[in-house]
Image 1 (cartoon, rainbow, N blue to C red):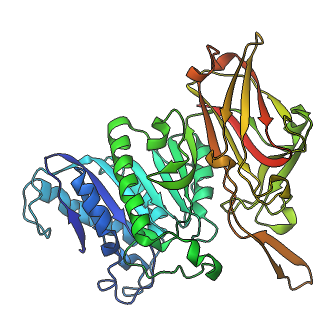
Image 2 (tube, rainbow, N blue to C red):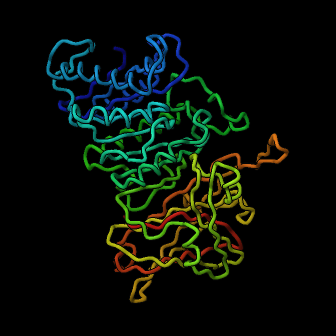
Image 3 (cartoon, rainbow, N blue to C red):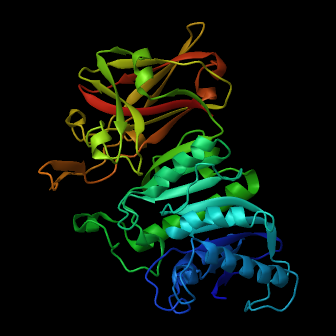
Length: 454
């Protein structure tokens, strides 16, 4: 039983359990990747949470025979929590400090990095009868289990570092869609610009093993990334333990930066989808001085029709509407049938691979029209996160059959634009019948995924 424990002031405090990932292992007891989250344990304990980073390296070791899935991780967590329960009740255990009365096993948040960022879902399911898990926070997760059936009604946050040179497909984006498709919880996806995989842990040697050498000088320092993570982890703990939601789902408008770092954020909160991009619905959209084209992003080259638009995640097929304009003031109007809620959410992204955008940030306005013809317009200025240009370059390589594959060197993540009902000058979301996007600039390209009420 190995790990780090951070003890807060006060009693009966919520508990944070941190799990590291699958990294090079010699002897499980000597490869102390749990120590890489000492900074996070300190930050959480200082904020009033009982925090434990556990050594689960045995799950990735062949020391006791070939490991199976995440079975050993679950066993380690289960055994340490059994010891923790005794310690909280004042019994003598292997913990080196007095934990009498310190923790509340009915308020447990699981945090995981890399492989551990996916294993926390399995741990939560396996131990749901033994502890009260109230939230899941996943850092640069590697998708090793399927989440198509969703998770229990737990707030979930997933962090994606832009220059992840380990989980290079940014599996967390695929996991986020699995969660959304199940419609059982609240969730948020945070794309951390300039972050990388190893930057979340002090125990990992930089650079990431599969990162592009050309990107090394663009990556934020490890200290900066850990400072970001420490602040966000505390905010996440506060939100899930006090309000049973994620931090960004408490916001009326999503920030373009978080703790001084640029981010692109998507949210999900028991929504009602009003429009989702797919080929049969493209004809319902009317355009003025613009063109509308249904496309599919796919990691399979033969099925991809979205050009070099480089969406995080490994999607077999992912529907988008490609909106192009060649005149300032162009617009597209999407008919919808409104429903009650607190905010309208539009998920979209600038297509940074399109020359029409001129490698510049975009701006747009959204006009909402109700069944009586009343309108309200909200403007999203230059610098709004989903409309920012993501700097990259076209990379080419030759295939074995003589063809050439081209891709964009960085990701073009979708982000959410939120419009609170209070911004609509008295229009109720249940009465909305259309949403119009007004474009600025002489030309541009945007990829639209979805319009929803949450």
